[in-house]
Every structure is written in C-alpha cells, then in structure tokens.
Length: 235
Image (cartoon, rainbow, N blue to C red; front, side, top):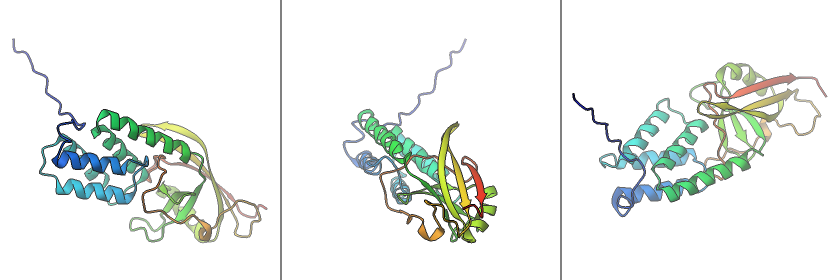
C-alpha cells in the first residue's frame, strides 16, 4: 500500500541566514521601518510594492507571499484601511519571532490610542470610482475607510448641501476579517447651534504621510456599519 507523503510548506518568516545579506536583509529592514509606528500608510504600501517588484526574481518564500498579498490589495485600484491592516499583518508573518512580537505590540498600542479619536465624514469629490465617495477620517487626519455606496448616495447630497455632523463609535462588532466599528452619525442643518459639530470646511486635513495611528478595519464594500440620524431643524 502506498503511503502518501505530506507536502513541505515553505517557511514564511525570515531566518537568520536569510537576513544576513541580500534581499532578505533588505526586506527585514523595510519591514522594520514601515511597522515602527503600528500602521501602514498608502505611501508605505507603494514603497513595499516597488521593492517587491524589484526583487521578484528572488526565491525567498516571503517575497512570493507578500507579492500575492499586495497584488490582491491593488487589484481594484484603491487601498482601504482594512487592506492596509491586512498587509501589516502579512508583514508580521515574515518577521523573525522576536521582531514580530514588537511589531504586533506596536499595532495593538496604536489601536488602543485610535479608539479614543472622533470620526468625521469627509466628501471625496476627486474620487475616481464614485462621485458620491465619502471618507471616514480620524481627528488626526488619517483616512480609515469609506462609507458604503448605498449610504453615500444620500449622504453625499446632504453633506454637499452644508449639513453639519457629529460621528461617534458606539460599539465594535466581531467580523470575519477583523473588528467592525459601528459608527453613528448625527446630521444637523447648516444653521444649527449645537456644539461640537463639523462642517466640510472644518474637517481634519488628510494625512498622507505615515502616522502613529492605524487600526479600524473599514472597507467601502460593506464592513462598515453606519447609522445616520438626520436632525435638520433641531436646535
């Protein structure tokens, strides 16, 4: 009777020998640099993509693995926060154990800090995929996702009409790909005197450079749960 042999699974994490020189050493340095603040920016995703393209001939399993993740993320032409977080976790998998633990800790610490930040809806009128696009932006300027299109169609009209807003996270659901924040958005008329409201001219300036915060796994395809209350005329 024939005995089947198990397939050997290639090791993803970089070994000491691989990191002594060459592509392995470069990849380790790159991973350490982009994970030092616990999050990834769009610019860093581009930096990783370029490095992987330049080193695609290498036989390191980690390069093939990360290339596959990046290609999947960039397939639709845009990078959401949930995808940046997915890539960050992929980088953790290729880091040596000791360094990986530090990267995980930084991600969790930045997550705890980010939970305390307010959220703001910001119209993205230059978006090439939807004329109704609305970003979810933290007070530090970091974009963490988009409002799903089925909500954005109506909300875009209200925000463009001068509606003021107050957005808060009320609870966090456990999703298949990570935690899903439930965001409650109260919209008020442009002449409302309620304190703590934002108009589109007052939203935080978008940050494109790498920052300290990064956790909410939001995506415009439906992982964001958002409740909207239109309070036009309420004082």
